[in-house]
Image (cartoon, rainbow over all chains, first blue to last red; front, side, top):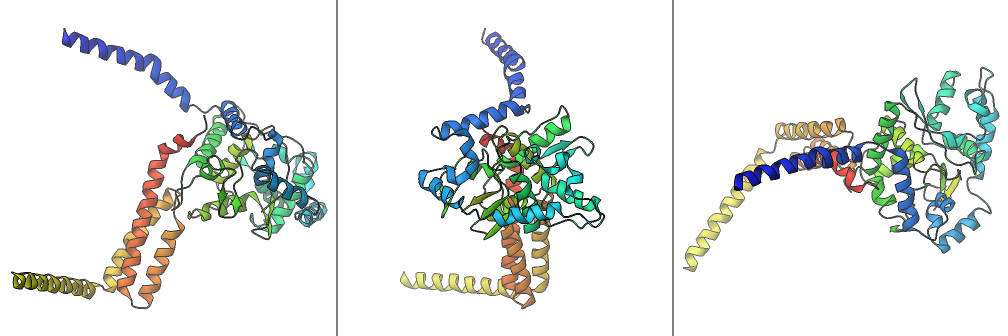
Length: 286
Length: 106
């Protein structure tokens, strides 16, 4: 009798595994970007119920009234203005071959920031705006700019400025490689690294609004919409590449090279989950 | 009774000093090179996992600096520290292959 009961229990467990647990476990592991984006947005809107959705793009300045007042005052004389001017001038100046940045981008590069990064099906990889700008330069016989310095910040600042208010519209085409890039970006975002054992999510999901020393941490929702940024801490402008690499070194991890696949995929994931939120770049941060 | 305690203590102390001296005497350039190579190998493995730590690189640099000054005791200590840090970063990268999912917003 006891043996029969064991067999029946085992059979039941096996059936449950086969028909219940296994399929749902597989389903949970299958990438589902729209469901991720909804869960992401819900998490932050529930965590900060008083905050308007579009205000998330203001990062730490959206986290409390005092900070918001600081932001309003800062916007009277925005510290990133010189960078927008520099970017505009660079953008309109032809390369040595007579062509310009406008020849490399849809709509002559105006009002298109919200569509980057995109998945390039020919290359099979994610292409960010910073990468596209340097590829444009190289295709026209110009040396690429550093991804973490002022020239790249100026170009992206100008392009963001012409796209202000347009909602992020990142697409994941029906291509397993695109889905894989998205999933890799998501894994990077949640993976702990560095001696401090922090992931991106440790600060920007678990602790937005909290302080790390004097800084107030920004929520991950909308965090790239304001890029590039003028940071008072840096006394200058910073690109997305600069932000990613410095985040890594701050947690005592050796940063990867700017525009390595991991960073491109991370930008793809973070931008996608902020779809619908307006571009507000260039921004200013403490 | 206290005589026995005192002599036992002296013996232990002598052994401790003797042992320490022999360890110190053993610290040579060859020992440093072996310790440094082990640390470098571990850090290279962390690099293959795309997860090196800045503190490992700093400990390796300290080891080299001490060795250049002929301070092989310090050089070995820094190498061992670097190896331990590199191994911790390997452990982190390996365990995070599945653990990252626990942080995910669902």
